[in-house]
Image (cartoon, rainbow, N blue to C red; front, side):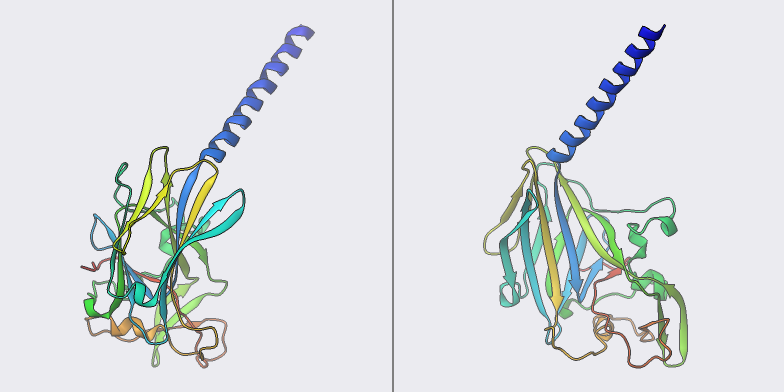
Amino acid sequence: MKKVSILVVFVCICVATMMINNVDVNAANKCEVKFMFDGLQAIAFGNPNKVTDGILDVHHHTPKLEIKEIQKGREKVIFTAEGKDLHKKVLNISTPNNPHKPTRYYSPDMSKDTSDFRWCLDIETDLFQKQLYLKEDKFYTKIDFQVGEFITDHITDDKYQFVTGSKIHSFKREIGTPAAYVLLKQGDSLIISGLEKDISLSYSNNTSYIVDITNLPPEDMANIDHFSFYYEAIKTNVPIYMPVVLKKSSFRPSPMVCDAVIFGKSDIK
């Protein structure tokens, strides 16, 4: 009986070791492209077949696309385009060999999962509960995503309230920063087209990519109400709700909010 028990324990250890090794192998074979968004841009979900990131044409802000390749923990910039390189371009992001429609990650309980996409600020759903429509001429660059799972990358440390004059909106929580993932399988390539030359990010073991899409002002720019530029891009006449940190004792000075927001009902042509 004792020998049988020892044999059972040995078999269990072998099975556990095999499972751990399989996890390690799978992790090593994972090849992921992560998209990060920062600065003034409207990510529109009104078209079920694609998601469009409209980068706002705002003075003192410079649109930039930077791609990094990560191998064995080391980052290397492999592509950069900014400013005039992106002016009035329409980029397209797809995986031709393995097409999928873009999705949003919703967890069973948003309050317990800060990766849930609903943490990101959806101006139409969270603030106005209606479609607002967008002015096409207000965008410097447009990027169409044919693939990708959109998530929240992280949320603010502080809770925010939205106010216009003396009117306070019921919105009162942390705000998330959007991101998106594309998991490449063997034989896949993610293609970014619309520039002078197509960019191909191919599947490779132990390799991942980060695509930073930014539209930021210079670091020394004075604190201004960046959020107000979104209202210049909206066709519908609505109250101009501005974000303020809840823990502040007054509404002035207002916080600098220069981050990507969501338009869950509108489409960008």
